[in-house]
Length: 222
Ligand SMILES: *Cc1c(COP(=O)(O)O)cnc(C)c1O
Image (cartoon, helix red, strand yellow):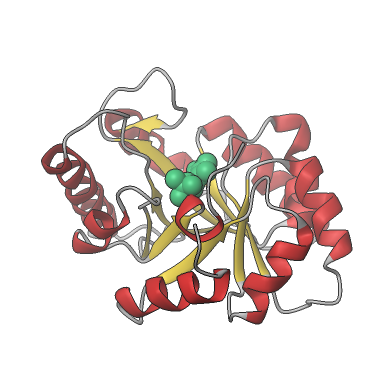
């Protein structure tokens, strides 16, 4: 890509509705490049590996108003570290993990913002709740009072047509509405974390409130 990071950021920011939060997915991106994105106005960064995030966060310690978002599959032995490093966890993908995070967050005295990762279509390559599993786990999730459950996250399976991807995003939005209408005590459904470089326009069309963009901002990862 020939344009600079700041030009790419400005162009994409201008193409998004102002209410949509742009999360720059900086996995495999060196700290200096994150610094350039920060200089161009980005304050939300997404990472998918705990160790990598820890070392980059240490290098970027002076940029104290960054909000860090964890977007990868979280192993339960890294849950505590994730709570120490991240404000948001988009990828809470099963009840046991949610309960563990809830317990650890209570011990640490933090109130992490989380999204529940859901699979609208079956996908053996992805973790996350199926719709029926999620609906049956809601009562237990509602008891995870230390977590601020804010909405749903989804990643469509690979190789769908645009129409099929849009249907996945629309069905995620409908599911969030359905859950919201059940008036839980703690579960909120204000956020829809969906859309990556290849499909974020479809996600926005379906009501995404947070898009997670890597390649389109930073170029291809190796
Ligand atoms: C890598 C990743 C992204 C960004 O993907 P791009 O196609 O590079 O925009 C978004 N979400 C998750 C969960 C990811 O792992």
